[in-house]
Image (cartoon, rainbow, N blue to C red; front, side):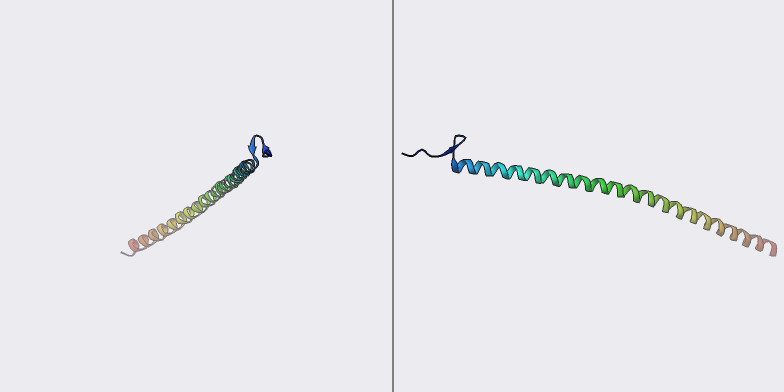
Length: 90
């Protein structure tokens, strides 16, 4: 009777299956770690973009608010001129 070849006490087909299984698990774990790192980098980039856009929006809002205030003052000045004109004509 020929002894069956063993590898670490396991028959050769089981040793190959175990090695394949461990290789697949390690490969998936490495792939997931790489993907998580990519997602983290993407999240950091999105946060930076958000901060940049937030500052831009604040600046645009202030410009619009200043423009509205200037236009409102101009309209009120014209209304005052009209009221003065109407009072003087009576």
